[in-house]
Length: 195
Picture 1 (spheres, rainbow, N blue to C red):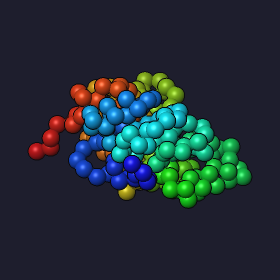
Picture 2: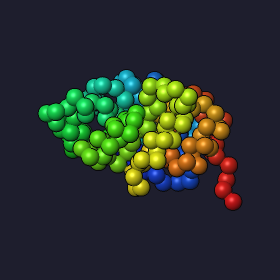
Picture 3: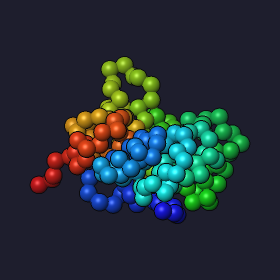
Picture 4: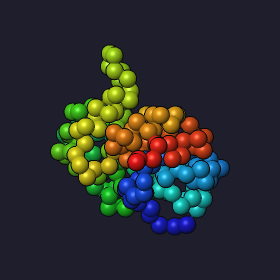
């Protein structure tokens, strides 16, 4: 298979929350697709992955330029703090010109606000960031979700592993979640049907 696959389309269409599977080889890519993942997350080059799956591929590494087989690339909003010269904005624009969708990783309200102001991305990766006293990672992500404007897509970066966690994220309005397990079979269609 060739050509770009739109991550935003994959996670916004259909019923329920989309599952994003981390993979590190072709076998895990094929298994994730067969088990119902709607996107793949890679942190290192996986030779031949483009031809092995029809799913959108998200590149998550500090070297976006190496995302040769990716359809989307994660960039960190935290880098905006040290980006007085606009380098991150230029990189964001360049990745878009190359046809990659940018997923902007945010860990707190300040990063979210800066990303909206300076980049206005379509897709956010909501990460729990550092532990805050008495607040669990899931709570921190759900707090961030409240500040994501309508019409933007939200991916939870929680490495969830249970159906209950996925169902809670879906009820809150999260569009997709990165799984913490390669065993997708028990997590597909995690949320109970709405009546």
